[in-house]
Image 1 (cartoon, rainbow, N blue to C red):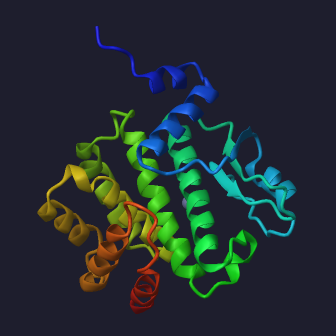
Image 2 (image 1 turned 120 degrees about the horizontal axis):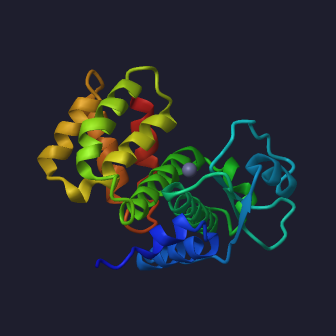
Length: 241
Ligand SMILES: [Zn+2]
């Protein structure tokens, strides 16, 4: 009999601490250091985030997860996970928020003398925000796909590609566009160059494909480890859209 996947067992028994451990092991395997964040499973992500960082204006939209750098600083970083989400979304969300935290700390070190609270005023914050979303989305999905066998390449081609095509033709935000590129990137190792190019053409029909392909290339080239040297290029490419 095949050995049961440890993550699947943890999901079935809602063993959140094992899920957390497996998410951290996955990140370690990708050389993403754990910056010592506190993971909290909470019923109200926005409410808890507001306690930790009262100055932020937060929406009321229910969130699966959120990374919070408390202000005033407490010396701790928090990753809040909605306790109502189940199954593989938990793993994807933990990995996703960890990547954001890792990226924020890296950016603060390089550009803001380690001061995380001033990041949002930096000139490169806009491209950084999109770059980090691309990384978080792609790493989260890759972590999930290691365990969730229903999320396979056929499902992507048959169901998700038409879904994203529709989404990209109903007035997407830049944020949606970057996340769609990350959905393609997360599966790029499972496809040939030609398949990737065809899928980009299908989803982004009517767009300026030179710009879309350029953006995909810049984001992919600085994916494997935190490398923000292409942020100015990513910024100007986004402005060309
Ligand atoms: Zn995100």
